[in-house]
Length: 83
Image 1 (cartoon, rainbow, N blue to C red):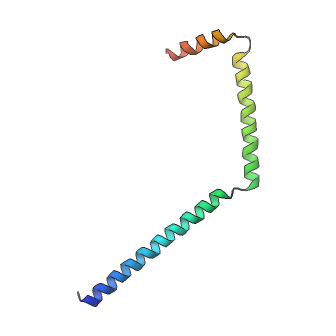
Image 2: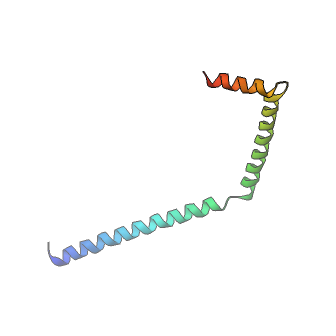
C-alpha cells in the first residue's frame, strides 16, 4: 500500500466517523426537543389523570380508616409484615 492510498483510506475513515457522530448528535437533539415540547392536550390529559388518581387514593384511605381505630390498623399492618 502506498503512502497516498493509506492517506486516502485514513481520510475516508475519519470522514465516515465524523458523519456518523454528527448524525447521532442530530438525532439526540431532535429527541430531546420532542420530549421538552409536550402538547398542551397531552399535559391536560395527564393533569386530569393525576386528579382522578388522587380522588381514588382519598377513597381508598377513607375505606381503610372508616370505623377502625388507629391502633387496630397499626396492629393489622404489623401482622401483615410478619407474614
